[in-house]
Image 1 (cartoon, rainbow, N blue to C red):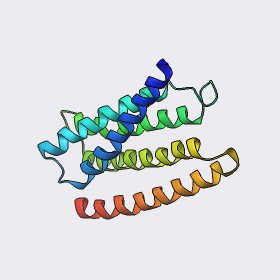
Image 2 (image 1 turned 120 degrees about the vertical axis):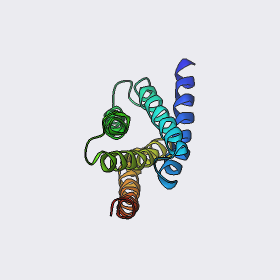
Image 3 (image 1 turned 135 degrees about the horizontal axis):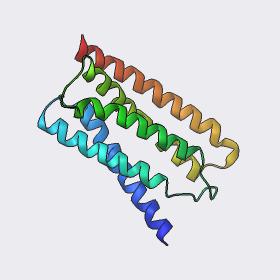
Image 4 (image 1 turned 180 degrees about the vertical axis):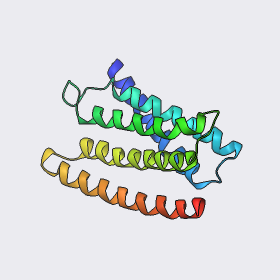
Length: 153
């Protein structure tokens, strides 16, 4: 029973992060709203990834999803730490923007993996998840680079 509550918590914070992440990226940067929503996103992602380490229902042991949770935590830290530093270094806002943007893209790629795990049999899983994740990453790359040209040119 505890396991199902953790799964429910995991899904709830994932959905919250999936709503907040794009909003943070869309609205103007550096505002109070951006900072509040950005920290909220970071906290939901931290909770999401920590809860992932408590879920072992697929194989009863750590899996590739746990590896991706570690990668997500590294991406999140690489994005949030430059913005949290008191003394900003040259190029900090580009690093912050790129890592946080890719954190959101990674979240959506994880959505496809989770959805595929729940809905597809093992035979089709890898192809569907790989294709959906690649398309998501390509769309993310285009949007990230387009916005970066607006912000940093």
